[in-house]
Image 1: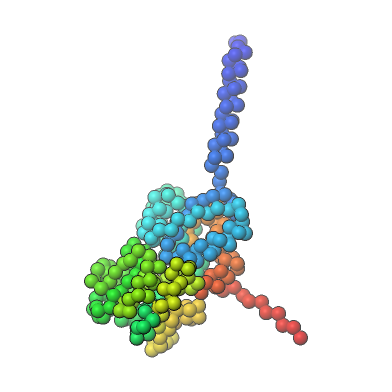
Image 2: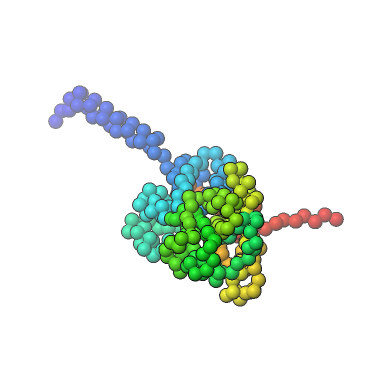
Length: 304
């Protein structure tokens, strides 16, 4: 059987064209590496201050790495992960059984790493006479059973903080007339700074080294000491959030931070998770006022 020169030439041209298309496709969609490339993450907006600090240093160390973090309320972050819009998420909780089941059906395994502990802080106006409160009082207020003359404010109604408060109080509605969800943690701080008859509930990370756009408001609020009557260590003492009270478990209101990587490979998700867990990443947590998951050791040189 004879093959014409034209047919042979056409077949060769088609092969070259297919190879070219494959090469171009590879150039348009490169895979992210451990410290390079671009990948989309979703992060709980409640923790954007500390995550941005970590991200800034990570990018400085690895200029070819470009993790793009979109901040959303917790419920939206989880939805993005389950709907395959992102494969890496930063949350203040682990995934539950049903959520892990969704990932399993898609043959995805969640690699979960805890990297910090944040305190839930109660703040009042600087002019307020309130300086202490108990966990039982907080629960009673959130249920609308006491101090209904004081406005209680917190961030987005779909946030991790609201979920935390619902679980703490056992009240899944939080719809009392004096309880308000604002738009963000910054708005909570600003509101309390101008309303003496209010109590704000926010993440401790927002009160340390604040940005210029709300630093003045932080100066006009103060943190309330909290007592936990069920604490076996010190049931009669009031504590304010700090690294010491978090590590000693004497401050009762805290939550852990996790990075969840469902990519199943050594890409930017695992690269950033490794950086968060590294000594440098943990020192950034330590400097921010939050509690690192593993406290970096200090080296002291003694000279004679």
